[in-house]
Length: 201
Image 1 (cartoon, rainbow, N blue to C red):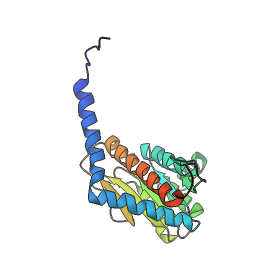
Image 2 (cartoon, rainbow, N blue to C red; image 1 turned 180 degrees about the horizontal axis):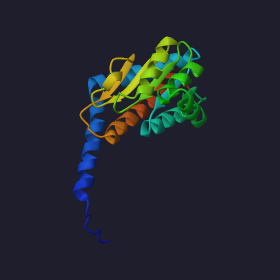
Image 3 (cartoon, helix red, strand yellow; image 1 turned 120 degrees about the vertical axis):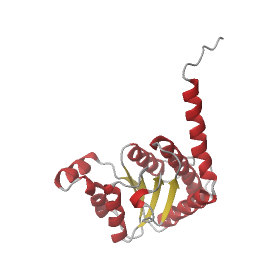
């Protein structure tokens, strides 16, 4: 079999190298600690009957939905469903955006669904989304804990959460989102081990 010349090889290889760098970033002590602490935080929350609310915009909203379905469905273990809601309902979002402004779409959902002891997870590559900032404020008002997946400098959200993962040094959102999703997958793996290690495979 003859392999033809790859016309865009330089672009492809550079993108792959950047992707590897983003994942290598997760090996830093700060990132390892974040992954471990967040997995245990979620496990403790769920042992007490709490749930996780997850929010983001655009591609990060898609990642929020992915995170939630791995909890309510299953990741690697056959086990009971875990309570999680991605704040993505289009009826709610269009209603609130139309009547109160887009800045309130997540805060109103937190007000509706969040309880003391629950966890709000936010996903953002800029850290400057007003609707996520308002969601964090609403979660704090309801005595929820907040976990932030951030990028670039962390933006206005830096320092607002109980735990934060900052993927810095990458100018484009795609590399940051790839690192966020890898961290989420590892959190899910550790979480299932925390909650279901004694279950049969």
